[in-house]
Amino acid sequence: MELTVRGKNIDVTPALRAYVEKHTDSVQRYFEKPLRMNVLLKVTKETHTAEVTVHIDGVIIRAVEKTDDMYKSIDIVFDKIERQIHKYKTRLAKRFKGREVLNEKLVAQEAGEEEAAFEIVRRKSFELKPMSSEEAVLQMNLLGHSFYVFRNAETELVAVMYRREDGKYGMIEMKN
Image (cartoon, rainbow, N blue to C red; front, side, top):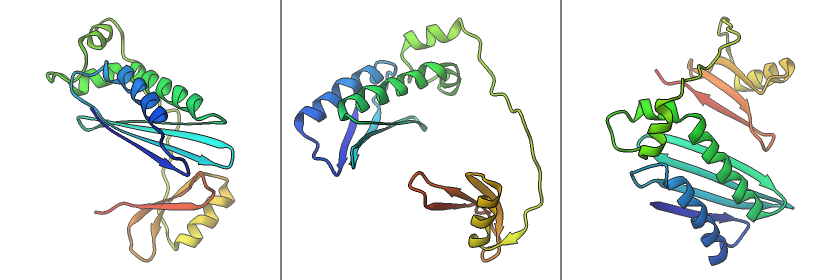
C-alpha cells in the first residue's frame, strides 16, 4: 500500500501516523491489489478534520469527517470509507470483473445481493444563456442553489459555478 499522511496546521506525530496505518489495514482487506491512499489531517480553530482518498484501479473513494477530536475524526472517516465500499460493492465487482482487484469475500457477498438502482427523481432542461461568471454567481444566489450551469460569455464554454464549503465560489468549465 502506498500511504501518504499529511497535516495542515497540525504535526503528524508518529502516534497519529500509526493510528491511521492501523485503520488502513481495515480498508486494504477488501482489495487484493495494493491501494494508494492519501490522508489529510487538518485543524481549524477547534475543528479536527480527517480526509481520506483511496485510489484503486481508476476508482476513487473519498470521505471527510469533522469533529472536536482528531482520533474520533479518523475513526469515523474510515468507517465511512468501509460503508461506501459495502454500499457500492456490486458496482465495484462489475467494474473490476475479470481482474483480481477485489477480495474474494467481497465478491462472494456481492453474488447473493441484487443491485439497487440510482433513482433519478427529476429532470430539467433549459437554454444556456451566455453570461459572465459574476452574473452566474448572482443568478445562483437569487435561486438559492449551491451550483449554477451557464455558458461563459468570455470563453463560450459550458461552465458550472458552485459554492465551496469555505463560502467562496468555484467554477468548472467543460472543454470540447
